Length: 325
Ligand code: NAP
Ligand code: 8YV
Image (tube, rainbow, N blue to C red; front, side, top):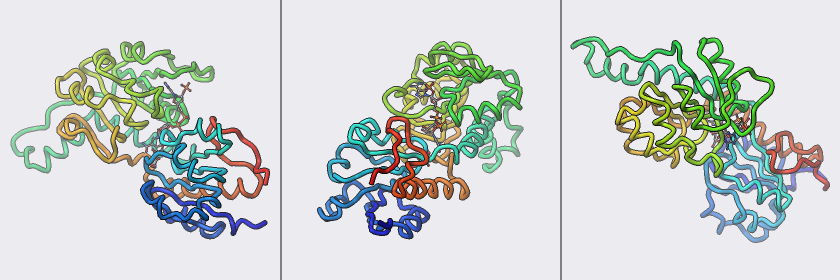
């Protein structure tokens, strides 16, 4: 049987390339949001075999799986999938795929950008120039990247790409994760407090979810010390934002650079007010090239699955198996 009769629900933030891809191979059904489920006929709900999730953080969990009894695969746009209950999907025999690797370099580039900006306070310096303060004197001296000790929380694909870039800056590098990695020479810290006590800079490249929730809290920020810098390109939920805002305001740490937030697109008001924080609107993967590659990988996973070849990039929680149908 051809693929053109297979119903695929394009869910979440619309992505033209995903739209075009599923329209050319499958029978697309568009649902923007959980609240639009009532517009889905029970006939379509019965027949939908795939969800192409176009990003966003609406949960994809038992509630959706209950509504789509013949769902086989959720192909998600993005490498992080903390909004998807992959364990429940696995229990029901539903595959989940994500979009790893294709975005790694752009996200690592952005982490290094944030680090340099936080160290040299380029946001504040630009505001200083634009508001005419330069006429009254020079911008105050800043911290330096020289002699920094960087600890990466989550030495996965993105963490490693950040480390490779930082190698060329000559800073010392350590990492924290649940497992020590045998093929790298960076110092391993089995817990975040041990790392925070030994470094002055933490870069978060770990996923969200229960196991990383608020790993960076007031105690960890205190251990980092007054020269401390925190960068986050992982997930907002890894940092206790209220504690971070207090630490920035009280001089417990020196600066922060954030691309991700606990309640996106909301940003904690005290962070918005913090002059020593560089704040970006979750743009780690947001280049044309990378977003196109991510969208293509969503479509490619669906085509591979329904062609009987198995998914290209399944998440570890869901078992790999070629589509039996
Ligand atoms: P990855 O290869 O799976 O790496 C994740 C790393 O986090 C692993 O090294 C893992 O090591 C570590 N980790 C997982 N749970 C942990 C825990 N409880 N405590 C400490 N470390 C933990 O994933 P990736 O491709 O590098 O992506 C990482 C994350 O970046 C994504 O999940 C996503 O949230 C975020 N991201 C953000 C953007 C953006 O636009 N800002 C773009 C892409 C991705 P262990 O298993 O050894 O603990
Ligand atoms: C995406 C990301 O922008 O891949 C991820 O985990 O955070 C970003 O690349 C996001 O997932 C799309 O919603």
